[in-house]
Length: 168
Image (cartoon, rainbow, N blue to C red):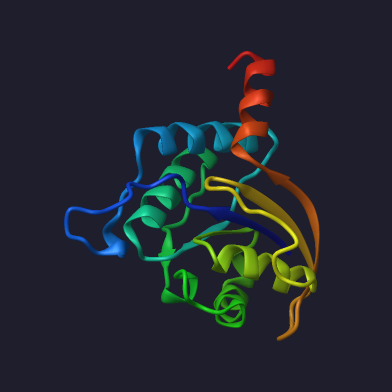
């Protein structure tokens, strides 16, 4: 099963409501996200299902990804992908959608890094996951303790360089 992990794009520091879950994306964040997703789309990334945290910034990120990657299904939102969730809870939710793979999971730090580590079976914090960063994994074992290999990790800076090289 192919799984893509996407960290939400740059968001405002503080929402007008004062609630963290209401923070929305900045224009700079949207621009960097769109660059990452354009490069990913040209590389053949097309999720069968998008799963995301219900926070405003991840909802917006997921909907932009749905549009630019051509994902047909509706985005499914779950608290399993909120910042304080556990990798085990996120993985349990992902397994429920296994038949819809490839999956694109849109989440936050610290969950997105701990989920990446969990799937790879490596200690946490051996990698940095930038805002609007996108990772591709191939999951070989999908039981309660998954086993996966990292196929690639696309940062916004790398995507910008690729995008410039291809003239888009």
